[in-house]
Amino acid sequence: MLSTSAFTGLAKNALRAVAVVSIVCAGGEAAAVKQVEYPTSIVEVARGETSWTSPGDVDLSDDVRASVLPPALGGESEYLLVTDFGFSIPSGATITGIQVVPEGYYVWNDNRAFVYGFARKSGQTTPAVYTGVTLMATEWQWRLGSQTELWLDTWTPADINSSGFGAYVWVSNEDSYVSNSIYLDSISINVFYTGGAPVIPTLSPTALAALLLALVAAGVVVLERRSASRAIGAVGA
Ligand SMILES: [Ca+2]
Image (cartoon, rainbow, N blue to C red):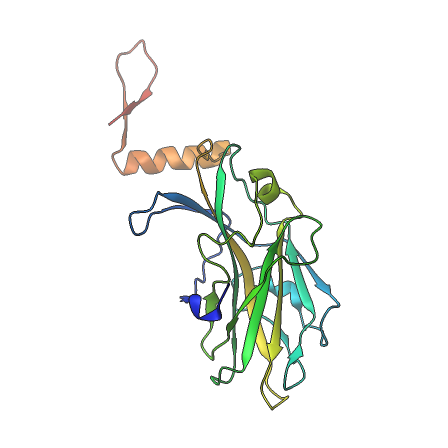
């Protein structure tokens, strides 16, 4: 059973992560690759009580925020359906965990505002399970789900790479006041996986040239004229 106490906040990351890939290895467990993406489609779904102001601003961690002011004593916001993340999980990979990561805060540090969410497959509207976390007055990237959370489902790379893959996120206000808005800056998703073909980024000629120049500048690659009759080539250091 999921518990809000199982989740910890992640220090705010102001960087735009178009595609952040890292190796995750904790506690001696098998290494998993983590891929992070942000949505390009944000739709407000009328399942709560109060509409968001500027819901599209959750597309990026840039301190430009969506906000909502749900009714006091349990009022809920409308749901935000975020999709079209552009994941590129390689075929053959095993999905080992999915985290939904809303970034936001509540102006009062009184444990009375919450953010909820669940990962969803394309077309899915009802969660098998969802979870939430208490919002604090300091802005954080809150992790909904762990590195091994699969939301009581099984996932293929195609499920994750689908433009319809994403999450539902909403907030509630348990405060007795109605004058305090809840703010969300972004909603990203972390996908953890093992196996599969390596992810090789596609570089434009300009980007490739820039990379080559950077490697030369760093001494990793040396350009050497081998003879008058041969072209200059790249030699691995
Ligand atoms: Ca934003």
